Image 1: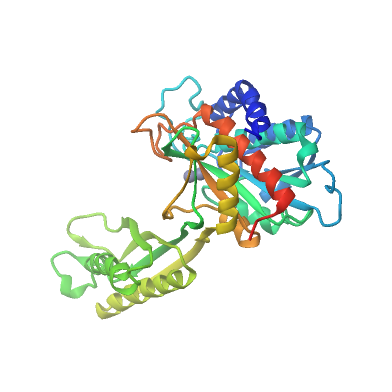
Image 2: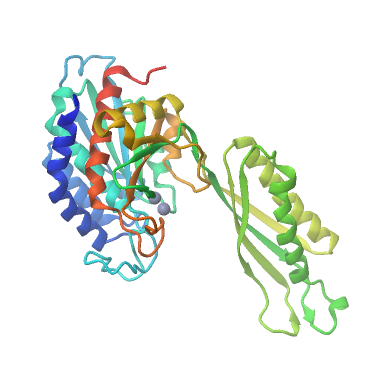
Length: 403
Ligand SMILES: [Zn+2]
Ligand SMILES: [Zn+2]
């Protein structure tokens, strides 16, 4: 194949990168505390001779800049492209039993961000060794706090896409239910907006034997939970997607006491901004209305989380074409639907077009899901991820995103 150079260079990295990935996996760090991970990334990028910028997103975000040397790379209209990885872990006790399992109680790379960081470092290494193929600049973005905290939002607001001015951004995520080394791309909305809400129902506490003297927040809370299930089924267009889930209820301590208040915690997911706002309004109206009918008061707080992550369809097709060139067309597919999971790469894609591709890490049918305490990013998938990143960068810098 004409693009075997990327495969060969990526494959040559695997042994070293496997060691590096295992090191990261053994030493996971939670969002905004990726101090050692960040130092390791800086060291690797400096070793490659890249221009390195640090201190982003409360401190641990890192950017490496690689200037290509192909003819036209230093022209005023040469392009720049951002390639992004996330570095944070989850607050989970690892149960994989692997030799490189987490050494830190209560922390684990259960979303595979160790693999994302390692793969992007591998891409930086390979692209730096072949910069003569790059007709522009590659900006490697290593962000903190994807799981919680929106590290990507900080990176974008702090200008990682602005100097040099990137006109596209690409990223990957490991996919356990996709065979190792395969690539799948969603062209269009890919991940849902994920918003959190808290409803506090303020009633009036009293004796369990005298409910007429009290305003019972537990009965009202049960009604609110039940009624919220009708928001999606009765108020959202059946052809649109949304989720309202209550994940926690807190109230009461004794069987014969009516408590003063009840708290509900939940999440709202949606794929379109107008649906998002409609669901927010309906959740608020439903909770307030039911509580008012019962003589109680509902305090409803809805917080915007990550935006919908929309893969630009043309950028998605660019990734599929590049992936087919390096991996073979039979290993590349288009995803027919979005996921209602959230992903803060959406902040990058609000600013510039681009796409996140899914990289298969599954080695058996029942491979542990993302966020499962036995999940592990499969090292054998690393070369495919590197080769796709490299070919995407090469073709985007040469031709942009075809219309
Ligand atoms: Zn995750
Ligand atoms: Zn993740």
